[in-house]
Image 1 (cartoon, rainbow, N blue to C red):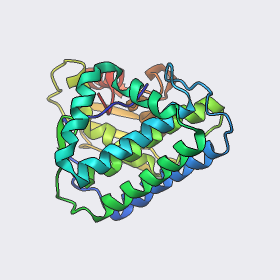
Image 2 (cartoon, rainbow, N blue to C red; image 1 turned 30 degrees about the vertical axis):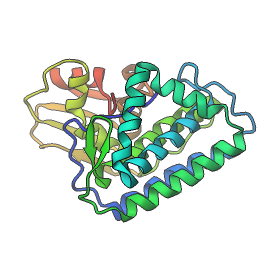
Image 3 (tube, rainbow, N blue to C red; image 1 turned 30 degrees about the horizontal axis):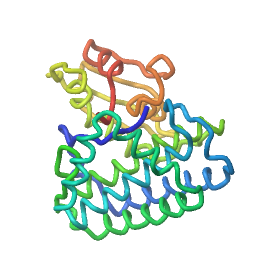
Image 4 (cartoon, rainbow, N blue to C red; image 1 turned 120 degrees about the vertical axis):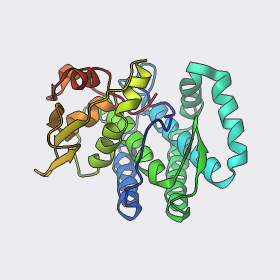
Amino acid sequence: MKVTPMLNYGLDMSGIELDLALPDLVAEGDELDALVSAQADWSKPTPAVGWTIAHQIAHLASADANVLIAIRTPEAFDAVLKQAEAAGSRYADLDAAEGAAEPRSVLLERWRAGRAEVAAELRDVPPDQGFPWYGSQLTAALMVPLRLMETWAHGQDVFDAVGVSRRPTGRLKHVASLGVVGRELSFHAAQLPPPAEPFRVELAGPDGQTWVWGPEDAAQRVRGSALDFCLRVTRRRSRAQTDLTAVGEDAQKWLDIARVFL
């Protein structure tokens, strides 16, 4: 259930409005900050096996630090990639454990400072300027929703750990959009050929509106709540735990394997 570095596989977020998305990224971090700041004990286990609240925050702080390296000194990002390659599948666990060992106050301030710097850098970098990431070149237009998605997903682990229900907001649309445009990533990760037919996705947003992607006459269709779709594509809930429905063989398969990260 850990969100590990994502490949830019078939993702096109060129239509994103950064002026709208950046405040949502900041708000997502602030909401999680308010929750964890009120928790005296960061050693509580979360749904990610072996990860406490401290591990979750350390992971987010480390990812923010890597974003800053990628934007400010892209030539130095090779060292980050080599470290990840050397650690292999244990990379996220080892990295999070190192940060989780810090005093709570130190880790909290590091995360706060890092996410503020990331927001500032993504606000100032030209929207079409590429910078390195894991297995890809990204732009601010894609990094903003990616950081929001990761903050939301790891935040969900923390909310689950402390037994607090989180009110869904319109910020979920960024996560849902990543889930929709990342459909081919899901099939790629499952070593399956991407579907040839177009898909229609209709999600009930938290304020009563309907979010729609794809042609109206598509035979492959997915419907449900935006919250459940986001929980599914970030692999925070199983398909059976959601209200999502699918019509069409490929749509059925997609809900079984859906993901927005590798």
